[in-house]
Image 1: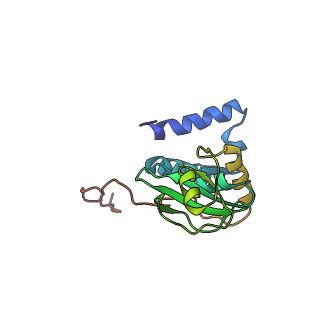
Image 2: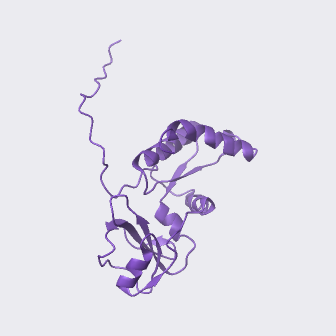
Image 3: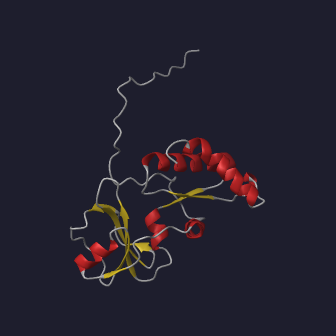
Length: 186
């Protein structure tokens, strides 16, 4: 959606619950994809998940898109995702666990990767060729069930509140309007 995500998301979730014959009070936890992705979309999704979790008294658990794509893939895997700013975002994994932090890279760059890694995602063929490795599928999508399984596995362990994963600064400029002054006076 180009616009209206914030207005559409909560009603859409209610529709999904209704289709499943469930209601908000049936939820024991919430999983939310924290990105990387669209700045506004990530803020809307994580904000709604945190607000719902607080209102329902359940945990909200963030899962990155990198984690969802690398999960359930044995051995070394490098996930690459296209960046709107050019280049790709990369994160290496071994047996579904991160080996390093995600970062931005250009396909012509050499980046440290685990030996024998399979490259998945946007630009996988270019990176794999540069590193002499195997290229996996370039068109990958995260399975929502996988995202849910990752979040479920984290239940009962201390988790930070979900927050968007940003690998670059926002394109938007800060407002030039002075900030609102909040006082205790009635």
